[in-house]
Length: 126
Image 1 (cartoon, rainbow, N blue to C red):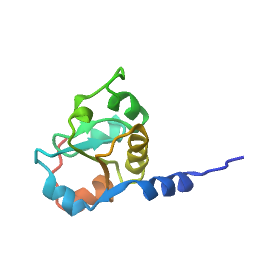
Image 2 (image 1 turned 180 degrees about the vertical axis):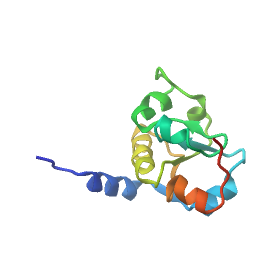
Image 3 (image 1 turned 180 degrees about the horizontal axis):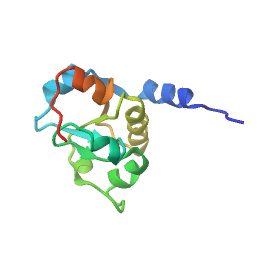
């Protein structure tokens, strides 16, 4: 029997993860202080993503974020603010919670995910 469902896990993540409004994220895009991190699956990313974003699928986030991990991406060690996004903001909230648990203190979840980004007029690359 399930003791926690996805709604419970998402509520826990949302309780501890900082959120950035999509219009604020759009304004920060292209700046030197931030890295956008796409936690979606490769086939989702292929349909369009935020330009210059780092790909770190949620299922591999620990291996990519950890400097000792076999898939490490140096963007996670840059000290820059990490803005995580997915399709709607749920998976990126859970990924942000994982990074928080790993000790990252520079992580935010983009409200509404890439769907909100597109509605806000944010740039998309394919």
